[in-house]
Image 1: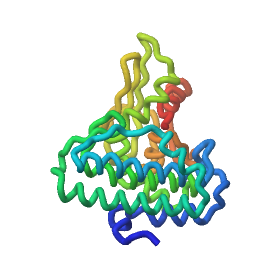
Image 2: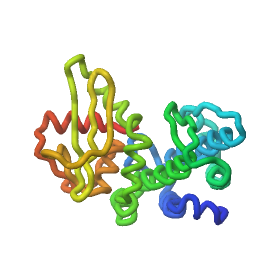
Image 3: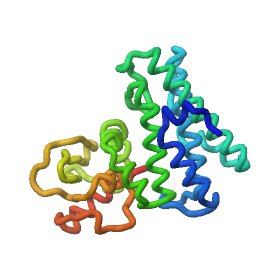
Length: 256
């Protein structure tokens, strides 16, 4: 049983845990090449690293973010030990984020994977990971659609994770000096998410709707697209951009 404070800091924790426990560890997921166990390993590493980096900043001794090789120790663990590690690291993250909210100014600058974030980022990012990877397990059930459609999910994806999400896709495009890709992801009644890529780099941000959208969808699908995912029902998104423009934008949205 997890400590009550985890439910306060990570309200999506229960839904993720129930989804994992409802499946066999070796079952496949919507995340290519990952089983249910792989997803749990990834989340354990996420919780550990988010807590480690934030705690080090609180202690006045900042550390660099480790890569995904941080997950290696968990791959050798039997299932009970892995569950214990996941729970313990989520509890640690809850403790550290509560301490940071109490002891650090809200605009404190902290480095995470080479970009600058504030203390609130750490709990919110774990929450996003819990929502996204629950969808990897369940697909488009009603709970996943509701969670993915929350405005904060889009805002976090664009403002806090946006450029890294485009890195792999941009490399795959192989743009030369004159090549450029620009796309608008539209959800009616909201600002567009505008993504760009050229030989000088990538960009992502919000802008008022203008002209035709490259892809129009519901809010949950737009979040999935930003993370390189696809809804089970392709009729939930629509495009009149044409095959070349659509293929380029879909490639740019390669996710991690």
